[in-house]
Length: 202
Length: 103
Image (cartoon, rainbow over all chains, first blue to last red; front, side, top):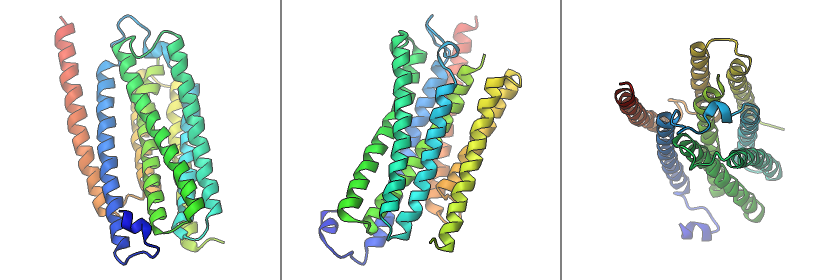
């Protein structure tokens, strides 16, 4: 890997290597989906296990998740628009702008999510309160952690765009970041549909 | 400023965004305004979720059999694994709950 970074000119086999990396990263994403699926299965088993504590209906409300959904959906769109720029190759500053907007939306999402988790903790409804809350915190927290890592990755890519410019390798990394980000939104849809909406129903 | 191919893709993203937005808002509205009974509401949530996931795969991840064959089949295989593991776990655990708590 290091030899590619040091060499100023791309080697002839670079495109196929990058395609391999993108496929490998897709494999990682698939295994990540399996992790989320098992957390969903755990939540499905634990959803009614409130141990005399507060239930989903008492704790979850819809306004914040709706805002979070809108933010994450907007960030998926801005990431898509950014992808038009990194695929066309030359333009750097509009690309940084759209990536930055994606990160701002992701930051707003994380802020709301942390606010919600803190609110739950203040109500004495932390992860140790019941099986339901353990499963809820692990599922939502794992997704939030993924968003957080995606944002760090995005910041790193913006630095790399500023310092190094947009070459084939940077574009390939951005492509992988894009897939990661879009799949996180897919996981969020399932969280909304399996946790928040059924939980808020009377 | 943009090449025609890019404009085409931009249209795809915008169309995907609008579809995903609609499919997000419908279940929220259903739950908030309580238009339907419990079971039809759950069915609406489920159907909208599946459709929205498909919209994301099609318009944002460009996952088409013609263009990304390997990634497409990897996803199908992963969904098979997920179906077996999640379906199996829930089946066993819910059945166990029935047997332990039902009597």
